[in-house]
Length: 552
Image 1 (spheres, one colour):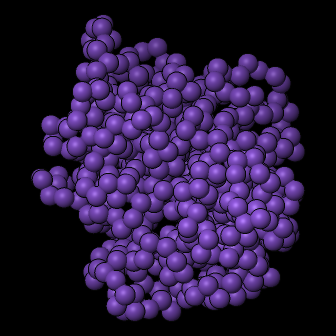
Image 2 (cartoon, rainbow, N blue to C red):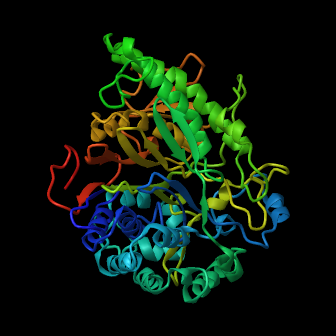
Image 3 (cartoon, helix red, strand yellow):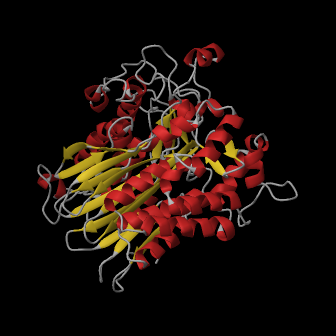
């Protein structure tokens, strides 16, 4: 990083913030800092991400070019679809048949090669190895996951070794989290990250997969390549938005986001603005007092919740891997109304899911990176030899003949991961969130307001939110799960008939959003979601005031 340059990063764990600052101190840019944070999170957050998961990122170059890096792994070449159908009508929720090729390491390497500083990824991986060997402890979020998944952990020798104390009791918050096998793998990857796919690490992992009962082989690992793709775009209210293309659910995000921006403008809350000038068509709104808070909440929920159901149903019907056939983008971006029909039910609740890392430096290089093991502790398998927790992204495949997401050799499942970038004349925003299938809903309730340069990012992410779902949020039928204050207290059903359940307080199901911004006048700010364990950090350059709510 050149003298005087600065960057800001948001991540859900303090270890990620420390790793990012070390990368910046070594001269790294925003992408280097994000990769350092990502490697640290793969050590300290095994319930949400690991070397055994996938990664999707969006990168905004200083020249304004935006690219998507998609490193989502495929099913085994010898996957037996008929045997899976003979067992059940749906893919299993967890277990060895749900493990697809882990893409995260290849994604890191692709980002480093295209946008990083020479040697930065290797240094970050060595730092992560030291963290795995000596420095990691159990965070509050990991402790909750250990408690919630105690039965699952007890059935897997690798998870048991990782997450229980010598006396057999589950690890609790603050306990040491030594991972010597993972440390050895990270040191190998520092020398050659592609050894995860062809080399010593690949051989060990392939043998571990075989022992666990997975059909994946060393040849499947060797065949993996990350993809650089053109992102999907949306121009809405003087802002251009970017989202990842299929197999990401980025199109679902843009479908909901387009309406969310229009809803925010119509409410007259003043949450969207470009500089000092009112947006087109809003001058008369700024001259009027905003409606009462209860009316704003009702308007937003009543308008967006049905669209969220429509968009989710369209995703479940239409999203698949472009390697098989081009998905119906028009149907995803303009979802047809359900007209009273019930949307498909996901097979299980994908709790845990994801970590988002966002960073931007004062050159205009910005990244939103999301990596994931999908459900909490992924497939429920930790390979004892390598210490790698393996994801269960394959559970998102369909077994229905003719479905766009039908599992097949070398095909990728639909992905919930949907990073987002936004840019106006006055602001560059990088944002992402944890939240599984609800990520488009969560981002639609946060990122429009963040495009106002005068908005306080910490206050925006602190606002109560709601999500709509069924089994994915712990309900058998379609339900709105609402944090207190996100809708009027008297609301028990929406006019559409959607039942409303108010949570006792904040819930992880409302997502962990990370957001950073660079304004046209050079200000860097951002915020990390208060529902997670992390924060934001401002690194590099001369000392500058840190925005309120942003830990230094």
